[in-house]
Length: 122
Image (cartoon, rainbow, N blue to C red; front, side, top):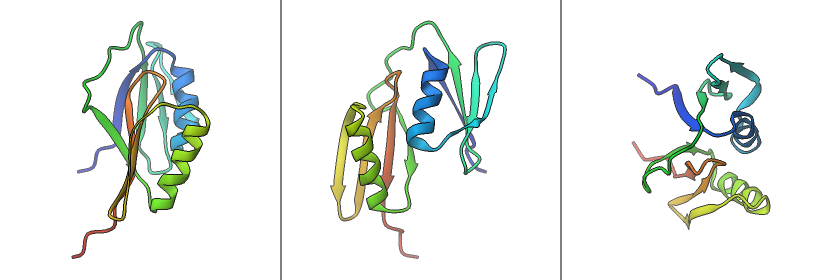
């Protein structure tokens, strides 16, 4: 079984679509818009992100987050540099030999993690 879908409440689906396209590879060409205001967009791995329009997004619990595993530590560092250059809020940042990661906030305050860990032996 594999997780293939995440639904997020958002204030501006088009703004969120731009964010997830620019930094996390979701293809706006796959976006489907539904009558209730939801926009579903897919990335190259076939993961669907459902951006559901709401009047107000509640602040999530501090630990609540979702993440993207990147193939290389330098990929994480490069993405972090891009986000910082674009003034995207970074709320955590780790750079150790066995774990390189950060968490940023999307336009609605959802915590998004990008990380790399070496493969586990075995």
